Image 1: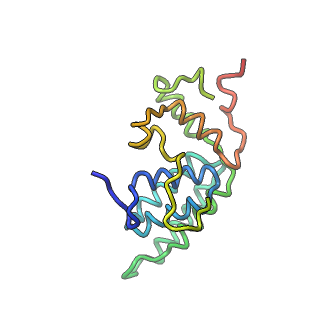
Image 2: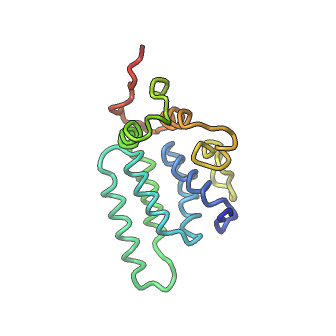
Image 3: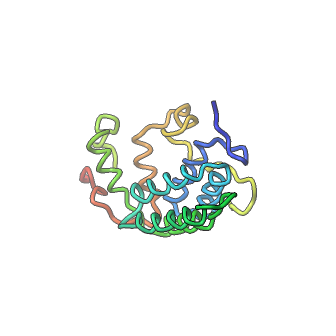
Length: 179
């Protein structure tokens, strides 16, 4: 079963596009898809994903900023008959797009727990139009389309690392060391 958003998009593709756009500092695409999820009734999911992105893709303690925005979102919705607070989601997306990127936390956990799935020795348009297309970079090993296309976790690691914008040098950038 495919879950659709209000705009007719595949829920999982929208979620993936949002995160990958944030990694690339593509604020327009990231914001569009974050608000597509929010407007589709997936407000809690959007925040869960933004928190994950803040830990998985961003340098420093940016998660505290996202938490403060989530608290503001919750406050304005406390007794609201209709959902409010899109501005907090928008601000979170902008902050995540603009912050320095570093995937050390995700790399560390994957190096420890997914070592067999990743060959560590080999690892290392305009959005003002509606509707916008799902970007090609969305389709990786984590999506149905990407799996059908034979995408691998090794490709994912390399492509997503190269896409970090702006990128902060990380602890594992040279792992394994260049020969």
